[in-house]
Image 1 (cartoon, rainbow, N blue to C red):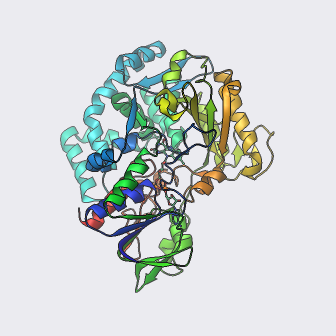
Image 2: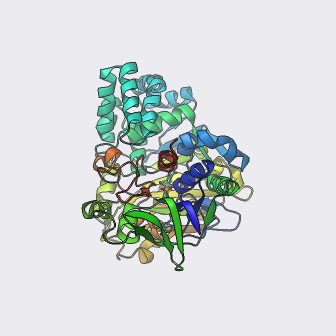
Length: 523
Ligand SMILES: Cc1cc2nc3c(=O)[nH]c(=O)nc-3n(C[C@H](O)[C@H](O)[C@H](O)COP(=O)(O)OP(=O)(O)OC[C@H]3O[C@@H](n4cnc5c(N)ncnc54)[C@H](O)[C@@H]3O)c2cc1C
């Protein structure tokens, strides 16, 4: 077997790269270790028959807004890709039985804001008015290789259009911690906590520099565009991508783990599979992998310069995540208000201080007393995912230690996630019960994925790190995954690295796969 390009891993970035290259006439093959494509985008009946759970990613906003989707919208739609939009994006329920949330209806958001602070309501209108002209520059930066003349052009055009003061303010936003930006922008602690929760989706607790961008972008983008999830499941994008790739003549082999990359004459020439077969690639081997896997396991010793290989092997992961999937009789009875039943996400993250404590515990190996919980309510938006009248809940638990060494409450003992995951899940359900009494009695089925299970499901999620490597400033932008190697091309000729560990980072935006493929194909 010989191909122009071999892609290792059928994550959505690997599939995006394969599609673009196949479209440009390359012969491509994707080799995937798991029994199905998708990586961290998978949908499965893990609780009861008829209840379809997004095991990992659920929110497809990044994909819907991506340059890749803009380029292939017609083809992917023809292959069945469907989004379900919601106006009611995210909210936080608070222990004082109040709630705040952001939805696409501006007047509704503003009226909720006014109940906390009139000044914050005015600030929101101003931020939103500016966002319309700020967003193209910020998204332009995220949509180009880093560094690149194109990215420099974005900065130049922003300077020209908005002036130096705007550029400096935006630089300050990019460098700020969530708390620094929120404290200088809003006065209500409820509002600040609601936005700060977005930092916790990555690994930005409120006091980590570089984390302000995510609460800012998520807040204003959800306000402006709403949120979308997949019709029938997030795997709608995977099904459409695999079908389109096949139509283009691309090949996908699941249950085909790559064991080694073949390097000869200083260039990557193909791969060896777990079953001993060898496959050749004449133009590129593209790894949709964590750098530690590529440089620690798949590349033969000495193939890459030692200093680069060492840096790649010591690429740093963020803390772990647990996913709890519930099949339920009804949506939670939120004490803070019935309206919360309509929201895609309800965060249980009561204050910036609480989030900071949780994060600090997790990085110190301690199971937090009260982890942050993101309660996803997909069937509030897309009822097709459960039998009529029933629902599913997607509980993402942020943040937990990849390797536990203790418990903040001193109740859970054990360092092995397999033996403690149910006790931790019970703690999480107790938290949700406080905000939505009766959840336990409404539960029909439950499936728990500990940080260790996440890594079993997808080798890239090392220690259950859902974002495939910390996004702190020293590992983001031109430093992702390591300084000097942020443009996908690796220090072995014809070897490329894409995926969440490369710029622009985690999320279902298909950014690195599409950008690397365009570099390879010349456009
Ligand atoms: C719990 C969770 C929730 C998330 N929620 C969201 C969300 O709501 N919205 C969002 O935008 N993002 C979310 N994310 C992040 C997002 O899903 C990921 O960043 C993204 O899907 C990563 O895609 P990828 O292309 O980098 O590859 P991956 O998804 O990591 O896929 C890589 C593939 O490579 C395969 N592989 C690994 N080793 C080998 C090998 N040796 N041989 C062959 N194949 C191999 C793996 O099996 C896997 O299929 C979430 C992630 C997690 C874990």
